[in-house]
Figure (cartoon, rainbow, N blue to C red):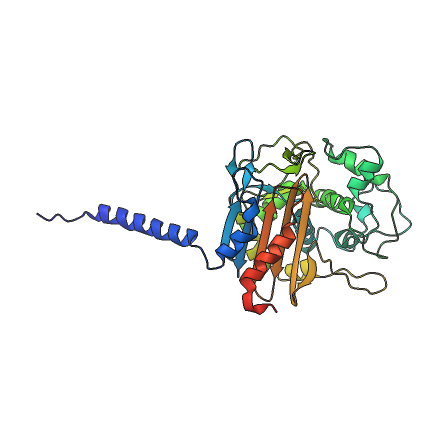
Length: 367
């Protein structure tokens, strides 16, 4: 005797089939997947360090994968949701916080930085926020300053200590005279965000960037003891060639770095760079505008987005490197392609991996 399924049973089966269909779609391998896997083949074992990689076209994932282990003590595999420290990739988010405050009218990019940081000395020239953003301020690199003063940057320092240290440093050159990459400048930008907004960089970014975009696994790490669920550990080669843990837990002065994020969250940032979900219509123009020196020379560096060319195609992006973590974010605006690679081993060169992955998906568009 045949029995009819109840409406409830039918509904359950529809949901099961829909979920299975969604899972198949999520896990479907594009034809380029084998070529991407080959790029990361040496890092694919459970006893190996590795990388997470994401590839998106017009803000939609083409491929995402993890290779190697996030934690070699427990052989935890790297996935697209593994949380990585991304070093100087952080700078574009610090710059975005500053640009949003400029849109709010709470600061101007051409303001004298001493209007917000009166602790700094009266320099012979005016140093503007724009100078800091483009690395043309003459502010020395913070980590080099620490090294010269016998300070281990891996130790725990309060923001006030970092600011006091930078206030003791003379300018390396007149502002706008040349480009010289400076982590010190971006540390000062984090302090300016706090003074102008009344919030820490972490809180401001959560409220104005990560929260609105849904980047729930992303934050600026300003609390050294804060537990980060799903965080990868990092490694360097030891004297015997074996992996040795590198991650330093105490350092927590964000701005130049300090960002923790995932491949999946960076897709949400990629979408924002495509359609400007934050701020007004001029925000993307501000972020992508290149710096200009006093002599009129135009720099490849914008607001923590470096303009470059790869095999005849224009790209923008940034790299990051610290504490054994390596990261690279590369976008090809004309093609709508974004590739980001997050790794947990010091000797890795993730920008090279990202460009190789881009070649796979760009295919005939490159010579």
